Length: 113
Image (cartoon, rainbow, N blue to C red; front, side):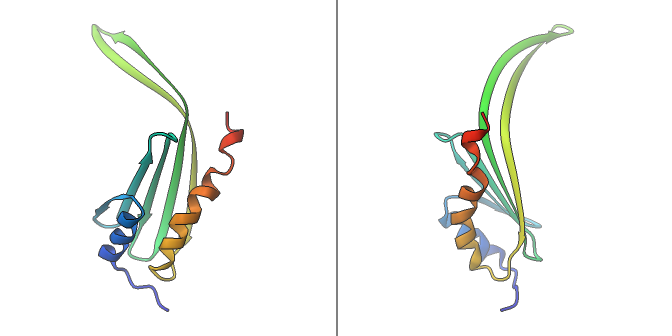
């Protein structure tokens, strides 16, 4: 089969998998799991190029500082970020990728502390 860009179809697949979507020049999907401290983002362009980004929060701290009388709130985070790039051949393979990529991207989470 030949790649055919179907932004609405791609958005529907992402939404079915629990992503919030936005369609503009690309299709963007975002899915967060607060309990696991993970965030996933998917970007698919009209050529079928896909970027999947997996982010896991490892630690976080907050503090305040003052700058010329202005109070600043600081939020420091240590994260693991994994980017996976690929080219889709057909829209339907996105379903399998969305099921398997989190496991591939997060497989080393236990070693990142």
